[in-house]
Image (cartoon, rainbow, N blue to C red; front, top):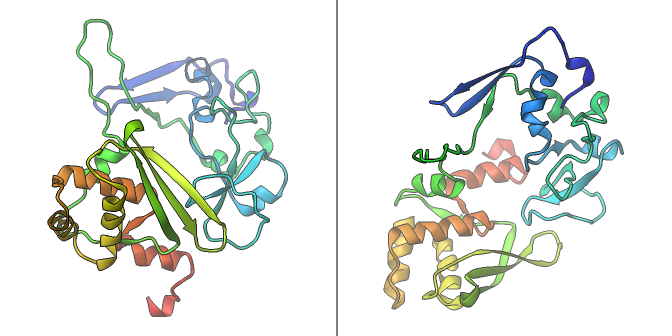
Length: 273
């Protein structure tokens, strides 16, 4: 975040673009490049995480978020391994503590994550917009593409230990899917949804596919066994997209990360790892 004291009028506004790395470098202090970046670090739709101590300090416009539902949690503050704390965002995605001059209104008391952040090393661009008539430059692969690219036939996915799936609604006409779930700990039933364009897959088929991951079979075994039990064939790429969707909505986990997650949450004593 930016403070008026960062400005040095003797320094020139210098920006360096690295086309190979698609990176914009800032040479100077924050206010030297503020006219270009317009406090981008306080505007992009990132989560500004807070510690429990920072959250309880009352210094910030903050909220509790459930890591599993990715929604605001309004329950009393009690021990919960799935709860996180972060700054609220304005409707535009802007930090609520950014003033009209694009300066930080709480600079002296800004969260630690903001104190640790620096843009002096440059900013990685997520897309490039060519001039008229020029060929488009491909943007970096999205999260979904990277996830699918890293999948292999021998990987094993297992059910999420803290999520119970009640039912699935494949709203074919709308191209959407709804997962009705319940989280361990008595937080009640909730639902999450996403885009989904596989009209040949019924609710029952999708439920059966999700339940197949409890057998601890490899991805290719799950796919082949599911295909053999149903009249609808599903290509490997399409299957991997569904695996990504199930993982995104916390229904299944990569077994390689499963034990580490439980250990990190305090469910497995270190002496037994």
